[in-house]
Length: 180
Image 1 (cartoon, helix red, strand yellow):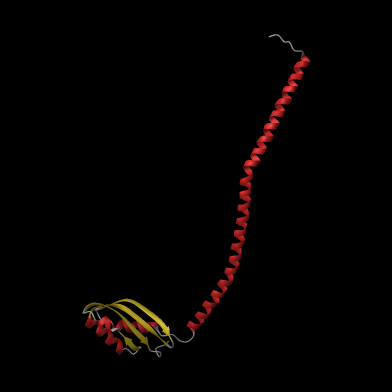
Image 2: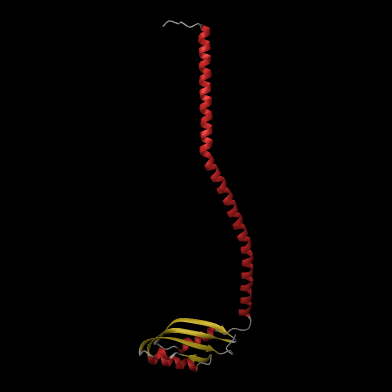
């Protein structure tokens, strides 16, 4: 190949080439930065909004927690008052009461539940169960009426309606003098 350009022309053309190439790279980098900024701006804006909303949520939780402490304190005071009311005065001896019910039970009676409610000086005991026959249930009721621990024995008449397999719910009023 024949070299028709002088050395100075070659340097000048090479310098111009590098200048154009540098300008092109600079313009491409500028447009790349601008497009990246435009594309990342919505994500940045949304993440900043999310950060603000999360901080507000945390603050509301802190306030609720502080308010909850006051609620817990008032609830605790209420429970302490209820416990004080329950612990005032003697309570009936549950061992003696349940023992007298168990002693009054005959073979045809099966218990399904005992429910005690303290009322005044005594209390009310509800005994649920099933009886094989009407006679077994009537004998159980009579045995409970003889017991000195109970001032009243209430067996609903409907419990005696079935001849066999009768379910019952006897309400026993506990004598106030049977206390510990």
